[in-house]
Length: 178
Image (cartoon, rainbow, N blue to C red; front, side):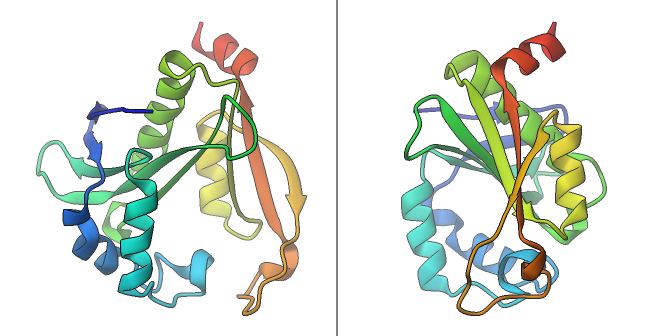
């Protein structure tokens, strides 16, 4: 999968590079941004570097088209086990929350996956208690699929309520897009 720059109405999404490590370390140092991921703990720099290495070609850095300010990142990761399935995800700076940017960027990658990559299914997951991310998934056309529980060595608040998975099948996307 080689996808270059993706333009949305308000953002430019460009492929992730190693030059983005400092920006991502700063993003992952915001306790509110990391609340439902690590319980607010910052991501160690070495882990960010490893993530960049693994996610090149599957993650895009988003900037505001009008100001060129960093907004966050968006991801589209092919399933390791099932062909033509992709996981969508994102992480935005707190200053970008509540503006519809998560929905805008996620929809762009969903449409790209169905139109250009031949996706059969798009899915996303979050903690059950993360109502804001669940709302983004729903606005993007994904539907609740299941709740599941994962054992963590260091669980964070809300872990006991599980993780939720949302999905959008090609047939539903085609109906919505027509």
